[in-house]
Image (cartoon, rainbow, N blue to C red):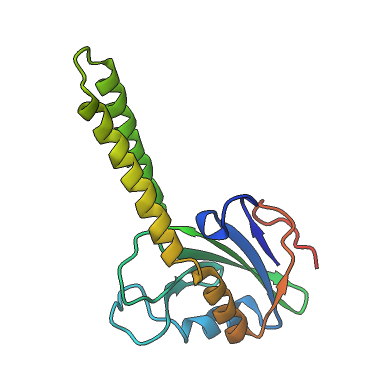
Length: 180
């Protein structure tokens, strides 16, 4: 079962969290997945997934033929459970894209307030920051729309490689129990 941060927004605009139960140990899961992915420094590889994994987790993203700064990045955490492992997967935009958006919107807010505070601000001076904000929102929406299937693709990729099954997610806290 997949849990979303916000049930109102489309799933590709929020983060998503899922849990996969595997009969393999965390180390075996990491090894099985690592054999099927290209590393971060292999931009021209042939495998469908790019990422890095260790014994306790890592991150994955789908290989695409185009550049998308708003693509889905899936963070994984491996937990040992009786007779196997649980893989907690959390998907969202790249933290760098989020930081860029915060900086962009912050600069737009300062520019808009400065334009409004100016005594002789004409309509064009006020309109420019609003158009820039509209462009930013449109860019994010388009980029996330392009990445809309990546969460499901990565979950299927993991399930196939580790022989896992989906589990229900209990809540958002790290290390919290997963309801089976």
